[in-house]
Image (tube, rainbow, N blue to C red):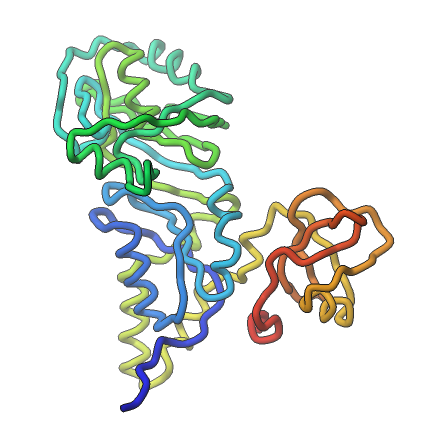
Length: 316
């Protein structure tokens, strides 16, 4: 019996524009299927209600997902004032309804209070785990478990629209990793004395990645069908959409070494450069080609942290 193929080698990052009503994992699996990729992972789940940028890392790029998980995110959120729900979004049940007597001045004043660093308790409907089980599973069983507050930073939170006739507010939020927009909206509603919940959430940016580089699953399927109709490899069209894997490391300092030093680096040997290296992770280029991340060892020399399995093939 012939061995079943596990897919092809694909290395790079796809900026998927996740549609509403689908889980991030399902979107990942569909994108992986379209690319017929051996390996893939996403970098930061979006709720089924949410849409927008979901970076998909293929192949060797999965080694650097943490850098995208740790980076800032930007969201456009629309909230309904006057109603609080169990999940802080429109997927939940309404638990309280109150009249809305809010002026735009009050709204701006309360929004401004969220700016900067603060402590935030994760929603019980988040994917964070407690004793190996996601919080949302406890919540669906009516069980509330202890949650640790986390430090967040709201870099900016701007009021884009206040639809007084429909009691709806639209904002753009630039926030640090791990910030729950639903929790901000719920807290805003409580501070205004009327309650609120999310009715639309769109992630427009992850780190430096621009929104105009996003591609939908429908667009991928169209390109796949086009390739089949032309009897050519789907990779002809699909792989053009992939960004280089080292774009995930745009915020890291860069160290360039020679091709010969790159071989030593890839074999786990420390590289002596004779210069002061920065602290933390470093993006390493050998003769201009990305070969992985490194860090300074106890002697001040460059050592490998995450290297590519096959640097030549992965860089092509």
